[in-house]
Length: 229
Image 1 (cartoon, rainbow, N blue to C red):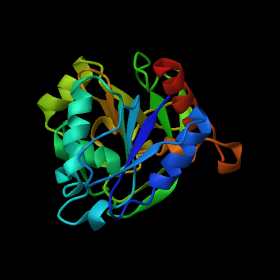
Image 2 (tube, one colour):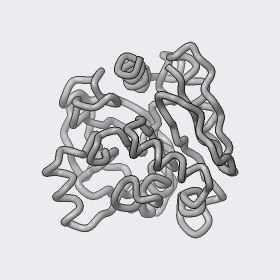
Image 3 (spheres, rainbow, N blue to C red):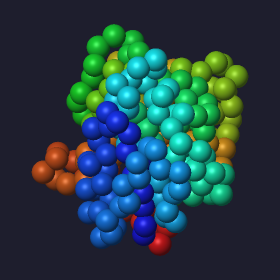
């Protein structure tokens, strides 16, 4: 499986994603600079976490205007899977590839720790390796992960089953207490209407080896390989 990782100034998880994809696919991902105007032919595009352009204006706002994002949008329209993690999720909302916005965490503090999320949908290449309702443990590391959208958009996400992950506790209970950032309806990840674009705040690339404390992210990437090869 061929993959690409978009690299922006200020990214700090592009190498994490590179290592994770190399580990699960056995193929070196293409590292695509934000000023590039062409995207190689790949099976998966990853937009990594970090602080692209220093989070000036809004998180992901400047990165969304990068030349390469035009190509990412075209690939998404053609059905290529796009995975946006943390800042990548923010970039996807700023480009309009996903609805809503990521706002400042409700406690106004940076959060860096493991969280539990519940798998809400399994009929996508990103989640097919999980079971519906499964609780997985994956790290978060963000200051602006509070997902916000108007009620019409939230209802649409619910009605179209486009909420991929919700924050929960270890038992799978979805509640305010288990929500680390105040996201509406406890949303940790959402899909586009075609289900080939996923944005999520937790970092699956940081949970691919037991040495990292969890392999629950490896399950997602292995499922992607199985779906796309």
